[in-house]
Amino acid sequence: MVLAPGESTGGPDNTHKHNDQWLFVLSGRGVATVQSENFSLNPGMLLLIEAGETHEIHNTGDRPLEPLNFYAPPEY
Image (cartoon, rainbow, N blue to C red; front, side, top):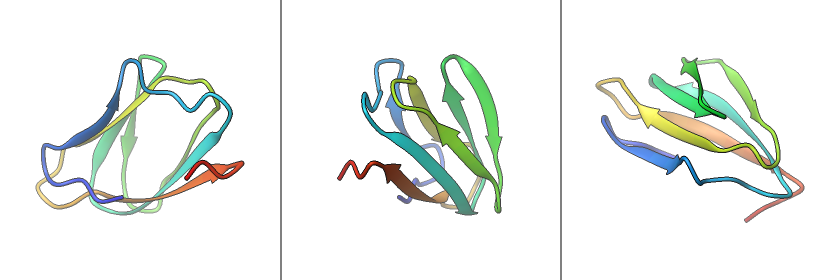
């Protein structure tokens, strides 16, 4: 996934009902909102969004935010 500066994906109703989502941040900076709690995203960070948790990913930096996403079990 690549998010341009200021771009976001997801939102307060966004969930993966049966799938955990792992994000490993390759480059860029941003904020992940998971269940109304904010987490800073920085290169090298690994974030787990558990199945059923609402989430949104927002690029707060001035360069593309590039997280590598894994879904377990596979979602897409």
